[in-house]
Image (cartoon, rainbow, N blue to C red; front, side):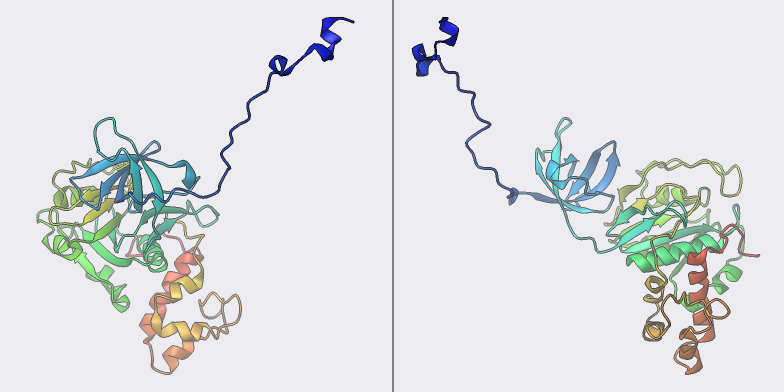
Length: 341
């Protein structure tokens, strides 16, 4: 018999033992990262997030998303915990290991049929809806949709009207008189002192069509921002001068989040009751409405109970009309018409 087949001549020195993958038992326990630093996400670029440690504009670092977070979304305004190289040096790269629960979210979809919702900004206290009074003319439909998104996301909406040196704001303001909506009016030939005082040391987000003067306002509020200012080439079709959301530090404290020029504001993710919840006097009555009621009133919703709130004097007809206008925006009312239409 050949040596190859003679197993009796083999001993333990002739046997090769393949090493295992390790003797350390596997565990699903994740590191606690007790030494993690708290930070606020202020910028994003190609899978890297710029974070301000403890919200300090002078202590910035760049971080990647840790493997244990999986596909957890991280957006501007998120409060996160970071570990690793947190020195903030040119080649330093930290890791985001936790995302804190959000206090507010500004969401949008591409249109009203798109099932995919995208969080634009997290944890902002206020939403500044920037609208020009002229060049381009104001669009109440877009304003209404922004109001809906703010109410549903837990932000305080504020109407910021620009270019008041070109047109009188009275007509537009009349459309929102029943909403108790904070309004700031600015002019191109004056500093936005009232707006600067209003936003104070909080985190505020700005939205608006391209060309309404949003970037111009940001440049005045944050002189070091150097955000590009474009020239409008047509109503709602100007060159988008801001291409990514970014949080910029205000000189007196707080942050302003400049968002890209938005052509549409889809609300596919919002339900009618999300809007009604922002109008306290109608919430209880809405619970008495039949299932599937859109609260638009007759003829669409003939049995809507919101009318009873006006009938008993708890709310004014104008207040209900304003609510139903917002509900109509959610239902798909055209948002391209100027305010005068």
